[in-house]
Length: 297
Length: 166
Image (cartoon, rainbow over all chains, first blue to last red; front, side, top):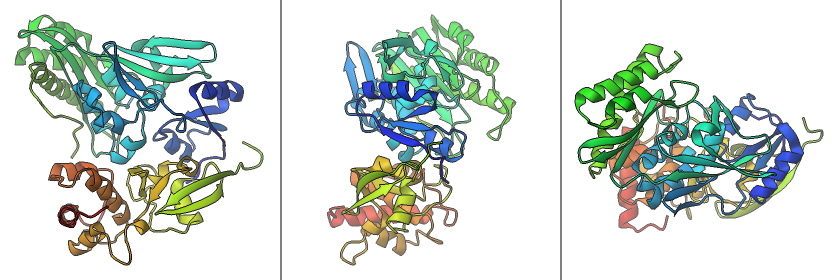
């Protein structure tokens, strides 16, 4: 399958890319990893007149720890994040990077592309919703920095202006007594998850002092389970409280029935995923090494 | 729609040989390999980034060549199934797939072997779980995978014992 013909522009720098976007107008799209955009173009759901390729820009795939935060260049690929010792120190990031789609897609796909696309079934936005995360955007007028929750507006819709791009994702390193986990359920590796849950919490002794719970694929945007968080915050987390959080997740989800399952099935699923992710997050906050990732048959 | 189709010059090293070609931007890497270079060992299966039949190595990393534009491979090194055999000798991965009956119709096999090659270059003794994860992006509709796992384990053992450079 061939996409509709387009004109190709190879950006030499982010500044150059922004300049090109501004000159070419709304018919121009950025090409990062291409693992969503190219299939959309082949199916002719997306028909950009111009593509601005970021893959030849040097120095925008970094993963660096600076001043208590991890900085991801827009073109840091999932596979690079999966292998990064810095990212492994925040286990929820590793869970996400190591489980997205399959090896081939992780070798190409980027964190910046994922956040800028804002696909409701994407993994990164859900995970990053449980952390303190800034999205740095470059435009001709200079830089704008958004909290992730302000950056994500709706399905496939962000705060980006047509001539702006995501330059960096900045994630504050959680405290040492923190733990997190991300679990996505999918039918096979290459497909989008049916549902997913991310939990990041902080323990003081055996008391959970801070917690964020987010659901993916069951709404137009990642959904924070604020009632579940409130039930666990300040508490010694018992199985009964975890069930309360799961119940809150089932209530907060806004799933659509589709080929991946009925709405009721997805509600049951997010409850189970929240419980499991909370268990793993607690174990990790206590210093245990636990491997989890996406689940598929 | 742009008026006349844009053509771009690219240089791509495929299986060690340098090719210079003019391509349309919308040409996919898999079509470039199959149609322009006549390297038809790389197959097109689903053509939607799912099945992995079109897997090749791009600068050592497995990619689905139906989801990369040929212009993006400018300056890159590509390895296809045609690059596995050396001096008339099958690569240990190819030999193991044959010996272990790791294929039936063979359509998915080139892609699977290149995913296996990326794995074995990074990890000479993968366990079952690591093998499963490494080929999770390659769909086989005949064999049921057990013999493919055996083939990759066998190839790994062979490559360790012969300290195969690849």
